[in-house]
Image 1 (cartoon, one colour):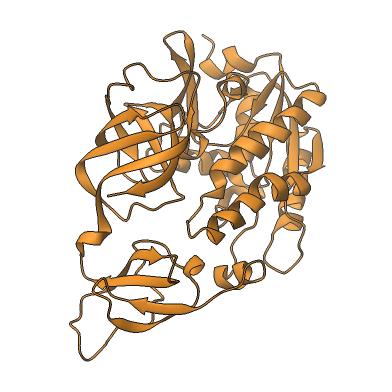
Image 2 (cartoon, rainbow, N blue to C red):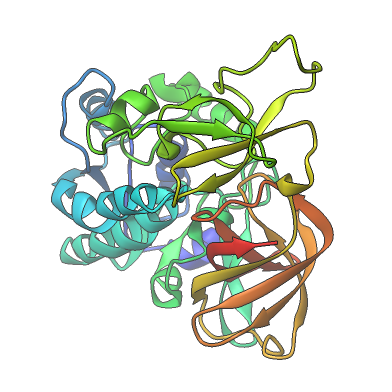
Amino acid sequence: MATTLEKQVANKRVVLGLSGGVDSAVAAILLQNAGAEVHALHMTNWEDDDGYCTAADDLQDARNICEQLAIPLHHANFSKQYRDQVFEYFLDEYKAGRTPNPDVLCNREIKFGVFRDYAKRLGGELLATGHYARTGVADGRIALLKGSDPFKDQSYFLHAVSAEALAETVFPLGDIQKGEVRQIARDAGLTVHDKKDSTGICFIGERPFREFLATYLPANPGRMRTPGGEDIGEHQGLMYYTLGQRQGLGIGGRNDRGEEPWYVVAKDLQDNALIVAQGEHEMLFSNWLIATDTSWIGSTPQGIEDGLSCHAKVRYRQADQACITRALDDDRIEVRFDAQQKAVTPGQFVVIYDKEQCLGGAVIHEMG
C-alpha cells in the first residue's frame, strides 16, 4: 500500500531545497524512495565573506550529497532578494525598537517565494523542504499541521506562507523524529549525518550579534533605569536588548540590592532609556496582546470576529497557550490569554493554533 508521501510525489519532478544539512539530505532520500524525480536547488542568500557565513562549506556539502545520491544540483543566488525583502525589514524593525524574527519573512518571501518561482522554471511540479511540518486538508482547504516531532515542529516559522504555496509543497520529514533522521543519514553513509543544526539569523549564521548589527545601525547608548525612575547604569543601544533578557546587562551583584536577577521589562524609545527590574516584576507579564499584519492560511477562521477559543504561541518552542483570539479588523487581532504570559515582545510573532492545525499569525504590536 502506497504511503502518503508516495501518493504525493511518485513519478513527479520535485525540486528540493538542499541546504547541505542533514534534514534536507534525508528529505532527498525519502523523496527518492517514494518514487520522485528529485532535483536539488541550493540557495546562496548572503555573500559577505567575513568568517562567519558558512555558505561555501554548505554548498560543498550539498554537492557531496547530490553526488552520493545521484541527483542533479542547481545553484541560485538570491542575495539581492534576501537583502531587499528580508534584511531591510530586519533592520527597520530594530530601528523602531522592536525585536524581529526574520526567519518567518525569509520563508514567505524567499523559500516559498522566489525559490518557488525558480523551482517552477526547473520544471518542478512540487516543492520540498526539510522543515518539520505537515500539510493536510481541513474544510476542503489546504491546512498547515504541526510536525510529528514536538521538539522540532517548525509550523511557527511557516505560518505566513500562502495556501497556494503550501498546496504545491511536500514536507518529507513531517511524520518522523529528529533521531530517526540522523539514523537514516548514518545508514546511507552521508558525511553530514552528525552535522550540527544551523542556528542564528536566517541565512546569516552564528556570529557576535552586537558586532554584526553595529555595522548597519548606530548603537546610540543611553541610560538604564528602574520602573521607578532610578538611574542604574548605561545601556549600549536599545536594539541590543529584548524584553525578558537577563544576560549581558552588566548590573548584577550590586551591594545595595538582593541577589535576584535583573530583567529588561520595557524600552522607552522617546528618552532612549532601557527599563530594567529585579525579579519577577509585574511589567514582565501580559494578559493580552494586539498584533498587526495578520496572515491566515487560506481563509479567515470561522468565529474569529466574535472571539475564537484556540491556542497560541508568542515564541518558538513555547507550549501552546489557551486563549481567545478576536479579529479587530482585516489587519489586526486581539489575543487574550487564560494565563499570564512572560516577556511578550513587540516585533515577534503570535501564531494561532486549533489543536494540530496552524491557522496563521500576526506581528505583536502592543501588550498589557
